[in-house]
Image (tube, rainbow, N blue to C red; front, side, top):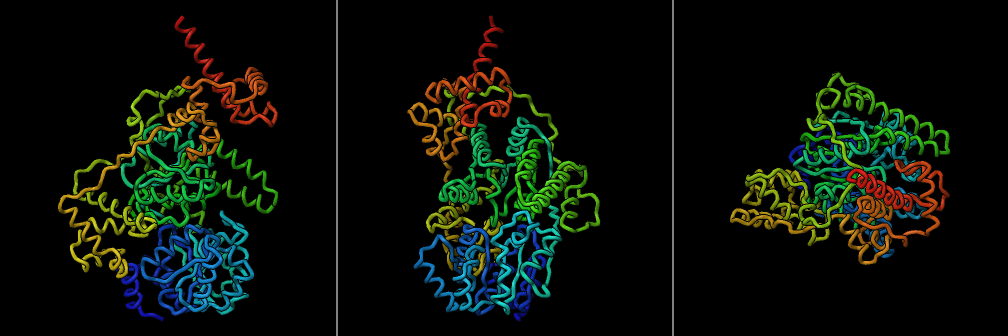
Length: 633
């Protein structure tokens, strides 16, 4: 067992931190003593350090089970930057690469070895792992093992074999969002023996929870207000579907707000590129599905917005909790519509397993209660996870009187018809949200160092946060070191990090003192509608436009329909067969043009929503034009 002094020395040497966060030292101690351990710690609490530090202090290998390849890759890259030997085995590697890593692992060359639960379930994996000198197993996102968990993954169930195959090796489960019932299930499924349990408070006092029921029009207005009233830091917007992600990004671009998309159907390179642009502060706003966020190590997220009702309180807590990891105030805004609840109910009814359906309905009623009941949001969350606060009011949620002033201003009615002015200067439409302009040298230095970090990361082919965390960057701006020992005194700069980048950082700081500044970006974006129209005029098909713009076909069709309805694009008879167009028109005469669902329900299944959108857009434009003519006659 290492002494407290030795633990702090190792923490300082590799991570560049002078002290532990709450519970970290005790958790590290439990693992070094060989105890089974269960850790429930909020997002941003420093869970990964709890198993990485004891891994460094042993002469054996810690095996980490993690659900996402990207997360494993980032952690291995970070450990490599710190001088800690680590590797992963997954499908992204060739057979020969995997064989080399396995051979080195059997020789004990790695302190940490990352595997997915699917990889561990393979019979051949267990075989070669039994030849690896293992210290202990760390199960990340352990709530995935429980059917009561909001992200249950059947592959995790097979982790209960670890005890049988490795009876003398300690097992540790880590999660950020587990109710009391899920915690008991983790202990049972992993067969933890007399486990040391560490349950942190679920109260994130620096977060402000605000819940607002709205309709489709007001939701977009509130979203725009929220983004424009958040002048600093990064923002995450969660949308419920891939189509909504892309439509929201396009809509924000039309409002002059730069944003990038993230969802599971994007090509891997594009998804990774968008994430890295957001992580390195090139773009402040990321709109994603729930596929985004797991393992994201971004301290300066100032707002997380949801555009639909999450499927559970646990999911909301985990996603909203990605805000304010630096401990500074941050907003968590849930903008939901009644139809969200209907959609959740619809999907629950599709579940065939009776037990899972019951669990889904329970989660449904819990999230509805959280959104609708007029009780302190923080207290509701704590009680949900089995924690009973001594306080009854938090002063940090809308129920307790804390909400943004802009949220109470009534939304303005908008005309249904949207007009895209193609003759306008494109640059006027593509202004990004900018941080509040400051004349301070500190802000100029921060942007200069961000640019330096992006350049180094691009040269090395790694994520910007692997080079330097936001908190370390803030420390540089505050201390402005002139020597390597001064740099070592900044949180996040261990010996290895200073060896790698110390001289370059000091040189960059000296150049800044001599007048060097960040290069202003000259990139100009064309609005989605303008770009789509341009491609149409080139004779591109809808499918080609979707591929060229990196969008789903339905997103492109929505943009085209908007252009038709605005009168900026003439409906083409080549878009569909005349008889199909006539079918849609006949039904529209009967049920009206207000909603697409009744039209779809009255038509054969061979008629798509996209085709309906186009015809309805033309009919709405014609009706509006006729109405306008009658008024001016």
